[in-house]
Image 1 (cartoon, rainbow over the protein chains, first blue to last red):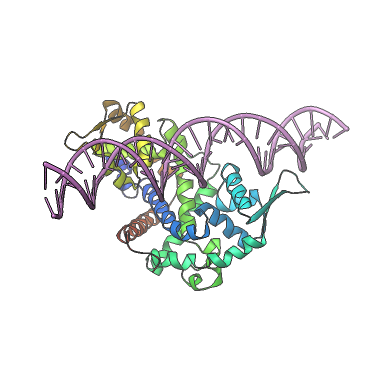
Image 2: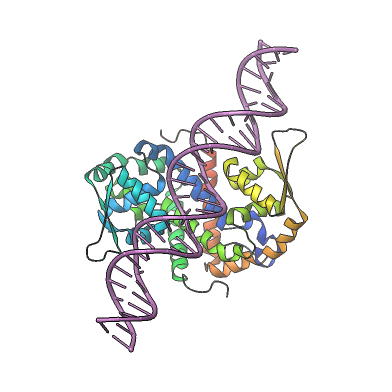
Length: 159
Length: 159
DNA sequence: ATTTAATTAATTGTGCTCAATTGATTTTGC
DNA sequence: GCAAAATCAATTGAGCACAATTAATTAAAT
C-alpha cells in the first residue's frame, strides 16, 4: 500500500516517504521492541505474550483457532507453543474427537502468569505517549485495513 | 468497538481486542505478505525492496545511514546487503576516509531494476483497497507514533 | 603521544515468519 | 463401503530481526 497522495502515476511512487506500508512495518517493529524490557521480566517474547493473551481469555483453544486469532500459521505456532509448554504455561494434546486438532490448554502456572503480566499494558501506555483520540483513530483504521485485507483474501490482487 | 484508553485501568487491559500494538503487528505482516507475489517477480524480499528503494533515491549511502532510514541494525542489514551484492544490484566497499563505514552503491543493474519495480506500488494500491482519506490519516498517525517513539528513545519508559 | 572513549560493521545465537511439503485423519462423493 | 478430496499439525528451509559481543578504526582527553 504504497501511495498515499498523487504519487500513483508519478515517478515518486517508489520513494520510501510515499509508502504507507513502510511506516506500518517500522512502527510495528519499534513498538514490539518496546515491549521487550517488560516481557523480559516475564520471560516471554512478544509472540508468546499474545498467545498467552488469547489463552487467558480462552483457556482451551485449538492451535488452528489460535492461529486464526493471531494471524499466524502452524509453522510459527508449533515452536512457540512447544516453548510455552516447556515453560509450563500450557499443555498440548490431540483432540480425541478429531485427532487432527491440537488442543492447547492453560495450566495453573499459565493462569497465575496473568497477574504478573497485569502491569504490562499500563507500562506500555506510559511508554508510547499518544493522544487518546489518535490512539483510538489508529485502532479503528488498523482494524479497517485488517478487515479489508481479510475480505479480499482470495481475490486476485493483480487485477 | 472496544475501548482503547479506558481498558488501561481495568482488568480487560490484557484482552487481545483492547491492544493497539496487536493490530499494528498483524497488519504489518499481512500487508508485507501481500507484496510477496509482486516482489517474487523481481526476486526481492520486502526488506531487500525497501533497501533498494533508499538506493534508488540515494545511489550511494553508508550502511549506517541506510539502517537509520529503515530502522534496521547491522545484524539485519549485513546479510541483506550481501545478498543484494550477490544479485549484482549493489556494490559494498569501505569508506577510504573512515574505514569503519561501509559504503553501499547502486550498480547499473540495480538502477535498471527500478523500472521493473515501477508497477509494484500501483498493484499494491489496487490490492489494498482503502479510502484515500483513511490512508492519508493512517499515514499521518503512523508517522506521529514513529516520531514519538524515536524522541522518547533514551527515556526510561518504566517510570 | 598515549591512553581512553566512541563509533561502526560484522558475527553469533535465539527466535520468529512464511512458503512448501509431508503425513495423519476425517469428510465427502459416489 | 471406498476412493478422492479436504483439513490439520508438523517439518523443513530460507530469510529476517534483534540483542550481545567482537574487532577495527577514529576521535578525544589528557
